[in-house]
Amino acid sequence: MKVVLGLLILGLVGVSFQAQLRLTVYYESLCPDSRRFIINQLYPTLNLLGGVNNEFLEAEFVPYGKANTTFVNGTYEFVCQHGRNECLGNIIHNCALAKLHKNESAAYINCMMDSFNAPIDAEACAISVGVNYTRIGECYNNWEGPTILASAGIRTHDLDPTLYYVPWIVYNDVWRVEDMIGSEQNLLNVICQKLDNSTRPTQCDQ
Ligand SMILES: *[C@@H]1O[C@H](CO)[C@@H](O)[C@H](O)[C@H]1NC(C)=O
Ligand SMILES: *[C@@H]1O[C@H](CO)[C@@H](O)[C@H](O)[C@H]1NC(C)=O
Ligand SMILES: *[C@@H]1O[C@H](CO)[C@@H](O)[C@H](O)[C@H]1NC(C)=O
Ligand SMILES: *[C@@H]1O[C@H](CO)[C@@H](O)[C@H](O)[C@H]1NC(C)=O
Ligand SMILES: *[C@@H]1O[C@H](CO)[C@@H](O)[C@H](O)[C@H]1NC(C)=O
Image (tube, rainbow, N blue to C red; front, side):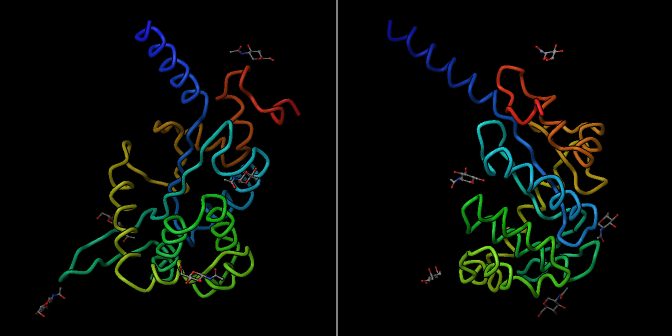
């Protein structure tokens, strides 16, 4: 009886895990396509569905993109597609993700992507979205920030297939070119197609 009950609970847990889509976005802080996607598609859609980890979908941000990492004389060094400021921006985004609540970090990242002076606007964005900048700044200004960015780099370099475009959009760890292109045009539409009819949000019917 206990075994049957255990299996039943495992079954229910399994079903509820399956119902929630996982969306992972590999991006870089100064990339125009990444900005457009986060500002026009991802952030508004997350707000519509109920936050970063909502009933239907959990979104994950991985700020690193097409950068490279080397470990030189005990410190990480990064080279980024859009120059040094992009690397600094990527560190700030990673620190925000590590230090803030998920909803807060999404609001913060959205503000940073909308700013043309990143990373200078790091503190202004914290004020604008109402989060404590001290924790982000402490991470950014010591070894912690580069170390987290290096981890984001390992995840990004490990992707299969290899990332060749940003934002690189992956559902449940599986990348498909049509999902990526479709999500840039109409994210809600792609999410709705991927959810079972029985578990779709009402926003899909509009
Ligand atoms: C995140 O934000 C959504 C609204 O966008 C809200 O419904 C949800 O409760 C928030 N989650 C947490 C843990 O605060
Ligand atoms: C590493 O440190 C050593 C000793 O300070 C120095 O000679 C060497 O040039 C450094 N290497 C790089 C790549 O900066
Ligand atoms: C990162 O390394 C790859 C392979 O060497 C190279 O093609 C790419 O241009 C490098 N990226 C940057 C931003 O320098
Ligand atoms: C902001 O965070 C720092 C470091 O965790 C903390 O010392 C400070 O009290 C916080 N400030 C506010 C207004 O919560
Ligand atoms: C979902 O609903 C649409 C129309 O409402 C229908 O065409 C489609 O077959 C349904 N899909 C599944 C998997 O039930």
